[in-house]
Each structure stands twice: as C-alpha cells, then as structure tokens.
Length: 304
Image: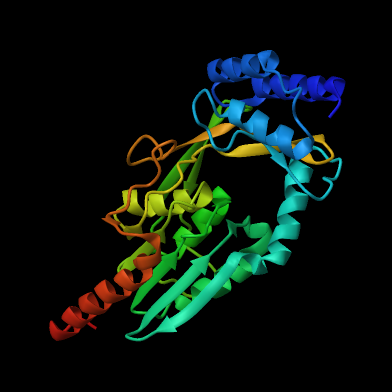
C-alpha cells in the first residue's frame, strides 16, 4: 500500500478513536500508538488491518476495537446505516440467527442461536417463533457456543421468554456519545407463550461465545436463572460502532460499556465463567444428562 494512504487511514482512525472510544484516557493512549507506529511494510488492506488491530488492542486488550478487513467492498454509508446494511445481509444469509431447534427425549428442547443475535426489527418474528416452539418443553438447553455477538434488545427479547410476567432488570449500558445509561428489562407481554421462569434452563458456552452471546449468558447467570456449562467466553462487553475508512476496512470502536444491575460490573476481559466448566464439545451431552436426571428425580417426587 502507498505510504500516503496508510498515513491518511491511521490518522483518521486515531481521530475517530479519540472522539468515540468509551474510555477517553485509553482512547488517547491508543491513538498515540497509531500515530507513532510504522505500517510501511503492510502489503495490502488485509495485512494493514491485522497490524493495526494488534496495536489497537495492545493497551487494554479490547477485542471490539479493530480495523476489520472485508473481502467485499463496503458501501460508503454513515456508521449507523453501514452497520444496518451489514446486519440485513447477514440475517438473510444466516436464517435470522436460528441455527438449530430440536426436540429431545424426555421433554427437553434445544435451541441454538447464532452466529449473531440480530436486532428485533430485523429478526424478531423468527426469534419469537422459535421461543414459542420451545415454550412447552419441560427443560431447555440454550446453545450459545457459536454466538459471536448481538444486540442488547435481542437479549432482552429472548430473556422476556425465560422469566415470568413481572419485569426483570437484566442489564444497563453506558454510552459515551450521550453520557447516559440505558436500562434493559424483560417485557411482561411477548407474542405467544413463554417458556417461563421456573423450568430448568442450561446455557452452553465456548471460547468463541462473544459480546451479545456473552451478555445473554451473563445476565441469566447473574439472575440465577440458568446453569452455564462449557468454556469461559471471549470477554467482550463493550458495544461498538463501525465506520468505513477504506473500501475494504471498517474501524470498529466501542462507544459504551455494560453494567449488570446485580454484579455492578461486566465480563469485559474476564469472560463469563461457567458454573460447570467442561470442554465446549462435551457441554451438550453433559447438559442433556444432568437435565434428564433432574427431570427424572422430579417425576419420582411427584413434580409434573
């Protein structure tokens, strides 16, 4: 790549990070790293993205802070429209994020979500339909092992099916651009029947589970609603924006941070620590076995 173009791109990225990054002091440090680094050896946009991303994450390890390469040319749109455009294409490609739904022996349902939890205006009908289908199960396994991100509003919608009718405060999010905190609650009314807040619920995680997938697991864990089984998750709790800085490069900048109302903190850097640690590949069978034992014991005790 031409040095002038590299200098222009890194200068623009540094300015955007100063302006938007959720922690201004860290944003300043990251911007200085970009301004002093030498990327003259970058062979092209993909190589430059990898080199810059390594430096972006060198200060505090924020995995949402990236210069992301796209093989297909990005549309020249403002950040919000760019992100929505990408989500629309991904939702259509990924069947609205409903990866698998199975009825298992013993009245157990398994619902796998991913790779993203898309915003309800895009895929809410599909999510509601899937949650309606599992509502009558005696127990539910929610598979988030390949859930790589998602929308807080999607998390709130899913959680609304996993609790009762009383609103439950599940998460808060601070946004630097507005200097305000938004609250997220379950809804007393959702389309169709709920699974509810009393039946057994296991959530499966892996080292790939990230961002919105982590929030769903973390919220349910902190509220004591689910047993989390699998591996420690990736550790990304900062919602981000995406900005086109080159036809094939998107700068993703975290502009907010999650604040759980129970723990007062989040899973950034640490990941969600499972209640039952087991290899991700073995988590599903473990959950099935434990749930069948629990349901069998409940039947013997006269519990429906």
